[in-house]
Amino acid sequence: MTVETETLPAGTRRSREAGRPARRLRLASWAPLAVLVLLCGLITLINPNFLSTGNFVRIAQTAMIPLVLGLGATFVILMGSIDLSVEGVLALGAVLTCMLVANGANANDLGLIGIAIVLATGAGIGFINGLVHVRLKIPSFMVTLGMWFVAAGIANALLGGLAVRITDPMIRGLAINRALGLPWGVWVALTALGIAFVIQNYTRLGRYMYALGGGEEVAALSNIPIARVRILVFTLAGVFYALGGVLAAAQLGLGNAQIGQGRLFMAITAVVVGGTALSGGEGGVLQTLVGVLIVAVLLNGMVLMGISPSIQQAVQGLMIIVAVAISIDRKRLRIVK
Image (tube, rainbow, N blue to C red; front, side, top):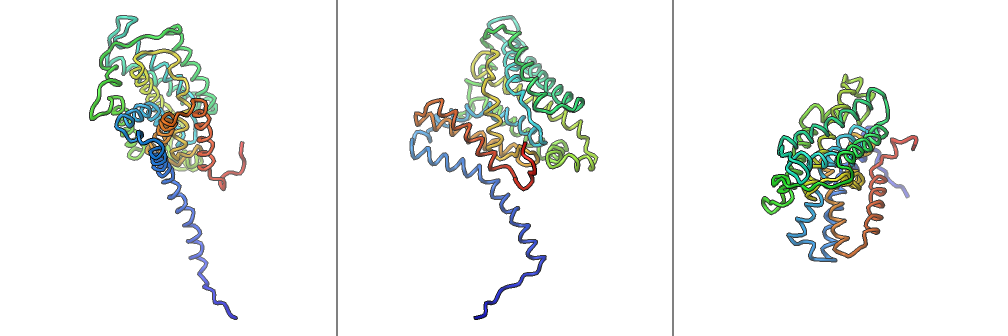
């Protein structure tokens, strides 16, 4: 019996083989969104109250601060670095916010000028992170880890362990007042997302971030100012973290040095779960939005199902391990450190 086989030209076989990874990459990019839809459907089957308008507002309020923090972390991760100063910058931003706007501890009432000072402070911390990282050639995670404690220490020193109540109606309005059914703070977070999207996709800085994450040696050969880009990205990330501090202070109605606890883990989890690769060069702010929603919906669903906080924390830890395991391209890794 003779079996006829189709013989393909070598070039055709190579093109088909090259096309398979591209198709897998496109499918993988849609996986987080599919997980979000599946998660929403599963929680709805268990508890139909998930689909109520009030619950959607709660999810939006839960997601707004992680989204703003995640935007800054996304930019840093896209270029292959990591920023651990999130909690310190957020705490300092919240403390400065409560001290510069109308409050119950002093006579300051700077309003928007106070917010501008807070954002400038975040930018300054980010600038120092980038400058020390680039000029002294210290790994980014070590520099930003140190700056986390520096910023948190300054926040503690400013308040001495106390909490200051905010009386400024504009700042409180970010959490209380609503537009189209959502708190103002949610709209501020969405505006930050829009700005981040424009920076990422329509500016030279955005293109350079991807280039650095794809390979710093190649970027250097392309005459990309690597040091300047790194410093700018860390500076920009500091602004987003400080904005997260403003929103956190508005949400609680006060500022204290412990307000940032746990924020780093949720921000990085959202970025990774959304599909941004820790190795850099892949992902983006829209993926981070999906990741934030996955984390917020999961937490909300576990509350609706009556799952204890300790189990919720364990699920989050498991989720980030699985997300990193899925996102890593093992063919590019020769050594795992």
